[in-house]
Image (cartoon, rainbow, N blue to C red; front, side, top):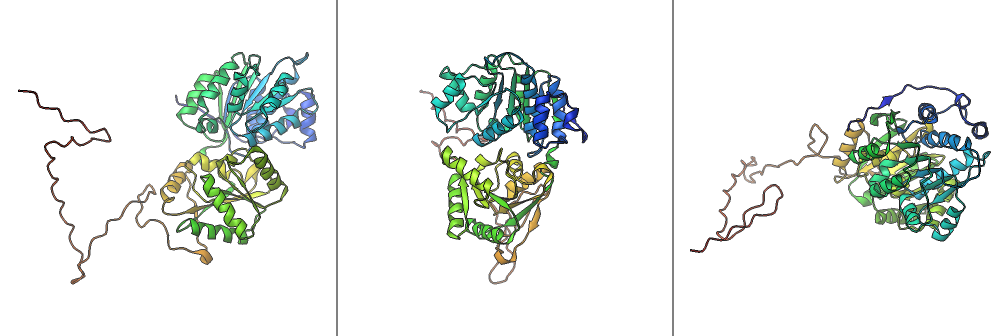
Length: 453
């Protein structure tokens, strides 16, 4: 299924022009929100009409308010006592869920709307007790929500509004079946809103076809426009130890308020963190092996300025909205263009400027080139003389940007002339009892036994 997106021009209305409940507008004014961002200006009027939406917009563009405000508006207009969960917001990570809860609480502060949070890493029984109080808005991650559902603690049959935020990331994390199950539990819903920072792939299109009804597709940014406020650079490195030296130089010499260093694995994150601590650089580390208490503490201290540096795996690539974060360093290149967009989206948020630096060894080159093609951009090559290495990229590069092997001709030691390439020897005939060769990755065919005479 090919999706048709509506590309909208930039508009600059004010929040008071939206048909929002007066108590919600009061909260918006209290928070000093005056002009909506482009994604808010495009999505809020359609959502207020009750339309199903599929919205693509870059990180830091204000997507959360774009779905929270119309959702709260629907609930604020409903009278009577609370007897059921009326809105569900699904998100991929605990950190993003916690930040979304804070946004919901701020925008609903002058209403009687109550919200609750259900994520992994928190006490299961305490969450069950909260669910018995029946919050109007429930925010959570798929895994723990299903656990509460299976335990009989959760009833979603009265949900009116379902929101899937960062749906592409939930699919990447293997939550496809969980998402479909939770969507089916909300079978009586009247509206579904799906937001993400990337266009996703076939799995996302499949989910959209199953859960959205005649949706409006809004694309506020094409892939090539994502994170366009962020300068993107690459620095060549010889190996991981050389990368660590480059990071130390960058932290000593770059002007920044806060920085995140991304790695692909928990082991690499701990190693980089240990290297920084050994160099007397105060830093925090964040990855999936850390329990929820440590993860909360690291993020809060980082936000409050207890350290200028956070080392993290992709568990922190989504949802972290931190003031003053203006430097992202990719110790490892992410494994996809979408992950790259989400990583560097931690900086240059809300129209600000940022710097994203990726460290590239020979193992990273082809991956980096594929991300350049995906973004339709070319990263700035940067050389730091003080920590210069020997690797300068592949000697031969295809037009696509991928490195290819270069065959060297042998040189005659006596004459100094290049030898002609040796002719390949004919392939030896297979032994009589040897299995037939495999073809295109298929298993070898077994040779038939001779028929008995």
